[in-house]
Length: 597
Image (cartoon, rainbow, N blue to C red; front, side, top):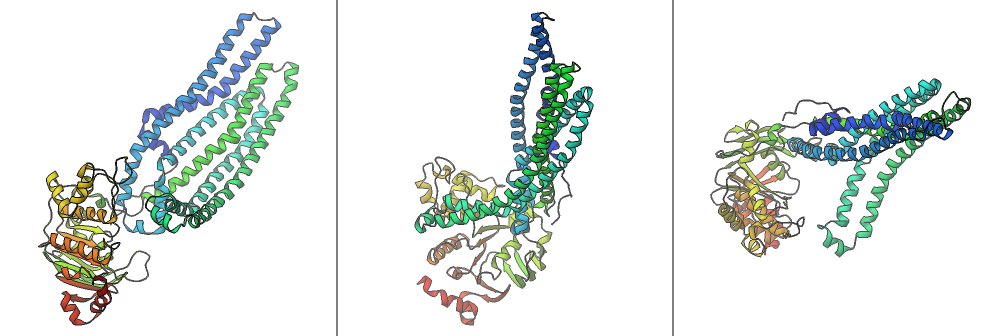
C-alpha cells in the first residue's frame, strides 16, 4: 500500500477551505470584519464626539438648533449599520458553513475510505480519526471565525490607538504594553485547551457508547429485562466526570490567568479616563472627544481582554486541529482502496496459500504461521477451528485488507498483491459475522451487492426469492421498495435472521466467482445455522464457496473441510475422512454432536 503525498495543514488553511467552499461569501465576511472593526471604534468615537460637542454648543447657544440634525443622523446611521452588519454577518457564516459541509464531508469520507485497514483497528489511530472526523466543519468554521475576529481586533486596535495617540500618546503606549502578554497568554490557553480535549477524547468515546446503551433501540429489550440502567448510568457518570474534570482543570486555570490580565487592563483604562479629566476641565480636550476616546478605550479593552482571548483561543485550537488533520491525511492509504469492482468478472480457477505467515500490526506473534492450502474452482470448502485460530484472518488477507504477509497467496498462479484492488473486489464476495444493516429500501440493500452491474428488477426479485425473502417482502407495506430501519416514519425494522438473509442476498447478487460466509450466523442457534448453510449450499452448487465457522453443523455440505489450528491447516478431507482420522475435527464434532440431535 502506498500513502498519498505528504501534506501539512496550518491555521491559514481554514481561510483556503472557506474560499474553496464559497469565495464570494468568504470575501464578504472578511470585508464585513474590516467594517465592523472601524465602525464601533474609531468611527463611532468620532461620531459620538461630534454629536456631543455639537449638542453642547447648541445648548450653550453658540450654534443654531438645526445644526444638531446632521451629527445625530450620522450617529444613528453608524448605529444602524453596526446592527445590520451583525445580522448579515451571521447569514454569511451560515452560508459558508453549509458550503463547507457540502464540500468537506465527501473529502473526509474519501480519505477515510482509502485508509489502510490497520488504522481502523488500532486504538491510537482510531482516536485520531474520530477526533478529526467528528465535526470538521465546526473546527474549520471556529478557526475561520477566530482569524476574522483577529482581523477585526487588529484593525480595531490600530484605529483606536491612532485616535488615542493623536490626543494622549502615553495612554496608547501603556495599552500596547499590556496587550503583548495578553496576546501570548491567549495563544497558550488555546493550545492547552485543545490538549485537554485530546486527552479527554477516550472518555468521550466511552460516554458516547454508554449513552447508546442507555438510550439506543438495539439494547432496549435487554435494558428492560435486566434493569441495568442505574448501573450503566453510574459507569457513564464516572467516564463523563473524568473527562469533565480533565477539561475543567485546564479551563479554570487559563480563565483565571486571562481574565486577571483583562481586569488589570481595565484598571489601566480607568486610570487613563481619570487622568484625562483635568484636560477636559482645562479646555484642552472637548467633552465630546473625551467621551469618544473613553468609549473607544473601553471598546478596545473589551476587544483585547475578552474578544482577543476568545479568538486567539479559537485560532490556537484550530492550529492544533490542523496538526491532527495533517496526521490524519498522512496515514498510510492507497487510492486503489476507492476502486470499484470491475464490470467484467475475472475468471477464477484456483486459490493457493503457500507458507503464509502474518501478524497484525503491533501484534507479538503470528496469527497465521505457515498456512498452506489449495482451493479449486467449482468446489465448496469449510474452514473450521476454535476462536482465534486464524479463520477470519484468511478472509482479511484474501480481500486485501492486509497485504504485509510473508509467503505467497496465489490466484490462478498469480500473486494476490499483483492484482489491482478492483479485481480483488470482483473476485470475492463476503457475508461477514458483523454484516451491515443499511437503512435504505430492501431493493437497495440487495443492489449494493453489485453496484457496477445493470441488474433488472426481475433479477433483484429473483435473488431475493433465492435468499428466502419472499415471505418478508409479502409482509412489507411497499414490498421490495419498502424502506428498512426506523430512521424514516414508514421504515420497517427486521429480525436478526431476516437481516442475515438480506446480507446473503447481496452476496448472491454479486457476480463474484468466490462466495465466502465468514461466520455470519454466529448469533443463530446451531440448528438454524445448519439450515441456513444448507440453503446457501444448494444455491452455491457448481460455484466456489468458502464456509468459515467454529461450529460444525454445516461442514457436511462442503466438498472438503480444512481444520485450522494455531495459524495453519492441521487436517484436511471430507467429513467422513476426518472422522476416520480421529483427530482434532473428530473431537470437535463429537463435542458438538448433541447440538444437532
